[in-house]
Length: 175
Image 1 (cartoon, one colour):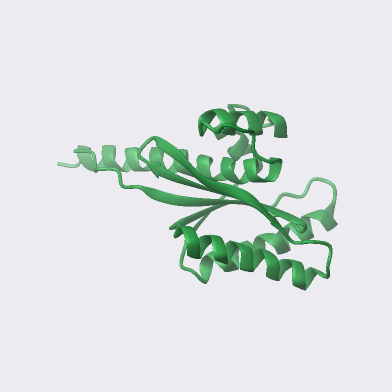
Image 2: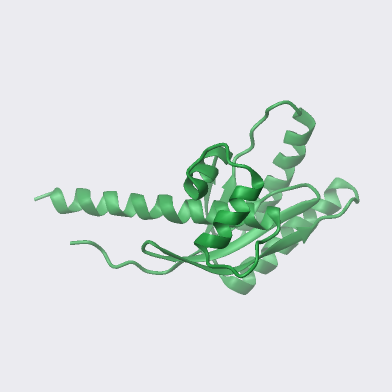
């Protein structure tokens, strides 16, 4: 017998050293519903102050909306190591905000997120923004970083749903 789906609030984060996108959804079974999204402006100050703004901003989101899970993009290094290090620091602030508030953290590669939302692992920002607007039935296209954060949350909702179905199917087969 399949277990009843309970609502799960997922905070998606698109970390950046100057702008960090966030997106909050509620997933119930296969249904994913938009709750909130936006940007945390970390600014151009010294790195410690920017990281504190990211940590504090996400902390306020967590306190206000009470998500139980955080979905975040994994760091990848293509050409610019300095950019990857800055991204890693912003991710660290986000992960610390999540862990100090006991959220379960799930990480996905950029290609996994794009594949889950657009069907293509190498989709562009505009495609992600468009599909997020369509999938979450938004009236407007969200800012690129907020759309990326929502995409991480939607990706996690889909992956989690698939894992639950597989676990239910395996449990149903055990005599």
